[in-house]
Length: 403
Image (cartoon, rainbow, N blue to C red):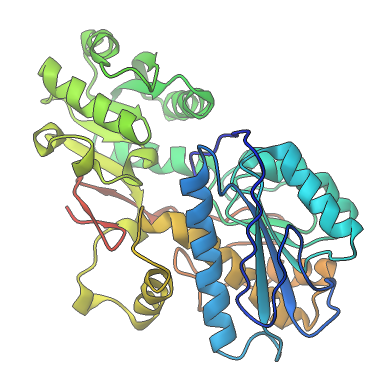
């Protein structure tokens, strides 16, 4: 969803068939473009290498939606068949796999175009020139402004459910202003995502007429972030906002506690909220900490869960125990349901006609993050900021933060 890099490793092909007879190897077994009985879904994902956890979570989400759609009778009487191939997070390999599928006459009806924005953007020219419907959680359109117009002509049949960085920054700014904070310190990892995150947040904070007192970056592999935090503490902010992912979240929290800088509130970015922080840091380090998150990651007691939410969880857990936050599964899950609703509305798998139908779906019943996503001007989510939440850290239970 949010943390997406690119790793290069050897190709390992994995074919997963959810309906009908399957193929082995690295391309779909049936013709696309609406031909044949099955509707073919090709998921090109990072299943090996450093991005494998994200890629595998995406696949679980895709399969959960495919299983539910097929159990309900398919789309216009046709079953979905999903084939998953491993590009190891390598954009060049992703393009090669898609090119092979097209060249062998197996153009997919729905393409889940990568785990990362790098893969998604690399495949975009082939998607456009071959009129392929791409619907995924990859952040290949992440520069889209919040609910603003995009260059739809540049990607007429490409859609993504992942929230834009602009939406995430606006949610944070709204929270900071609501709390009355005026002076903000900014900490981020010095990797590619951290740099883009820091630049976007600083820009949004200053545009909201708040003051950035100081900013600092750190190597996410370094265990002690105390020097950077000391610099930020010296700027006397009202609040610290921090970006880190995985083990680095624990380094930030532990260093802050070690420094004794716990009276100043800290807001962890959405990258904090996808990890079980109780496994990387002592709970004593959570003092005055809240996390920017999505509402789907707020814990809901089993008795209060809706039938749709229970069905979503069941479709995930029937594939095995949940390993990460629900949003990691929900974005890909929603992307398949939206493509399915588009095909159902269009009455065809013709990508151009389906894209037009997806632009005018409005609110739908089957998605779990938000009911409405796209417009004729926006193939990135028209994000309702009410889908965000700010929660106290706690363990992940059923993929939700139990504060």
